[in-house]
Amino acid sequence: MISYARQNSEAEPETASPPVADEHIAPSPRVSVQAFCETVETAAAVQSAGEDRRLGKAHLKIQMGGMAAAIEAYRAAPTPNVIILEAEGRGNILAGLDQLASVCDAGTRVIVIGRINDVMLYRELVRRGVSDYVLAPVNAIDVVRSVCNLFSAPEAKAVGRIIAVVGAKGGVGASTIAHNVAWAIARDLALDSVVADLDLAFGTAGLDYNQDPAQGIADAVFSPDRIDTAFVDRLLSKCTDHLSLLAAPATLDRVYDFGADAFDSIFDTLRTTMPCIVLDVPHQWSGWTRRALVAADDILIVAAPDLASLRNTKNLVDLLKGQRPNDRAPLYCLNQVGIPKRPEIAAAEFAKAIESQPIATIPFDPQIFGAAANNGQMIAEISANHRTTEMFLQIAQRLTGRGETKRPKGSFLSPLIEKLRGK
Picture 1 (spheres, rainbow, N blue to C red):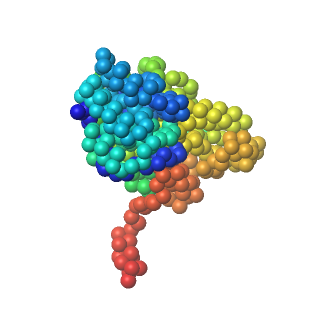
Picture 2: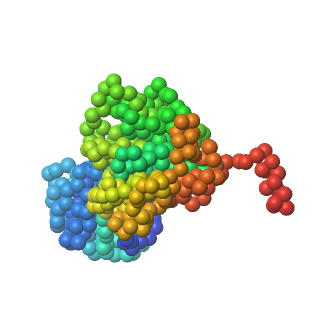
Picture 3: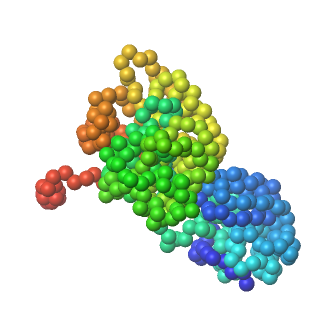
């Protein structure tokens, strides 16, 4: 009998569903995956899944021939972490699995793609140790979901959602938006969150939150062999009950040149401990910034209503759509709208060029934004009823998929007032 680490419950398999743009699927670890397909359509779906960001660490190999090819291949070769098998016919599936068990290594997990929608067959597959049964025809997101779910135990904590915020150009206020949106996620949605300031040389998150931690993200990125949950927790600076900061050093005593995967272990560790991670991505184009954007669960581009922002937003949206075909398209907002005497591109023209509407249009208000920046406060702390405070909350809801808010308590009389209203 083949030994597998995880089995699904005995539920009837569902038919293949189209990709869900807002579905949150945890990325897979570094594993080897080999697929044995019988049809060109399934092979194409598996190939497309291999290009998905959530399988970016997986090593995928595809062969034709189905069950028979798999049995022959593993007679003299070790089996990978995951085997994907396309099979037709009840007898062919069960008999083939029995033969595969004799040549398969212990610990290998098997996903079967079949065309028989029958609960009795499914129970037989589960009894034989099959990890998942997917009903054909399948699309890329079906394969991604099946492989990734093998490594996400139902009893484990939900993997954190990464939200990347980047400016379409410098000086558009992307960091300010990122910090205020993270504040709304933590305060109004009561979701434990962390802001990771990735602009190590000039980051402003420490200033905006009035924090001056001795350690921060630089200590992690320059000590990759030490990164684990306990180490990252020591680097976090507590801003509120629900909000923490992984601050940038904002010093120029060293050059911050990194490889494309320099932040991978940091993000993976944060995912295991924090439900929401907001990345303040600097406006630069390098291997690691591109990787951070492509690997994020959701992306917010902050743009000003000018031609350079329009061009850059269009380029970013087009590239990220192509790199993330199974994810929600990047969102964008317009900031600093309405500067006196400055010619601007109207929001409608912006939307026509980008082919989507901005999720918010934030007006130019130098007095309140300047006061917040100089005082190390958020807009909501200075003016809870300011119109931009509500905008930040709406952006937070869109990015997290949460519509309900948990407002902080007003006065000590609030509970009494609520009781009287109830009566």
